[in-house]
Image (cartoon, rainbow, N blue to C red; front, side, top):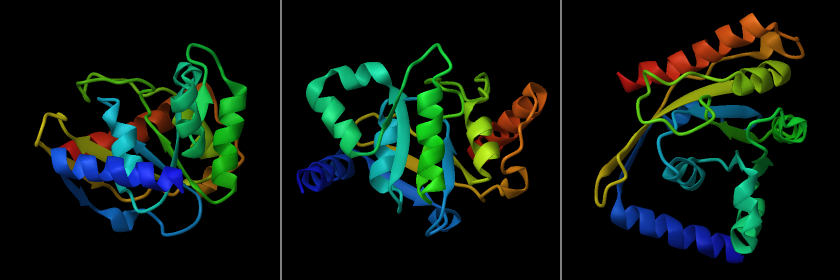
Length: 192
């Protein structure tokens, strides 16, 4: 109950300070597992996607954010998965796969960190690894925003990528690189 009230307040706050437009929400399946993969330029990105996409999205966030008692409680209540940066965090990968195996939506930023220039950013292997192992649909999203007061935020949701033929396959490092670049390439296409 408290979580829903906090979500309502933050959503209202965002509607007041930003003009939010979302295009292509029908590309997100109404049920079943899928991953939403977006560009990442601001700490606002996951907040906006959690609050304004039509399904609940479970994101990963750096474990340091969970050290703050109240923020940690809020993140856990929102289904955010803590991840240790700079290391292969097997627990976070397993938790992410469990989100998808349960038929829910996992949100990831393929670059793994914030970057202002979408063209100079490089995709990491994490999103490709989880998507290929689970065979989940991947839905590319481009967020066009500068997050200045009263500015417009335009979220473009692209057509989903069906990775079910890859389910359970162990891809080589080169194949994961190729899939990572394909996913991130779809996000870049939406920015044009």
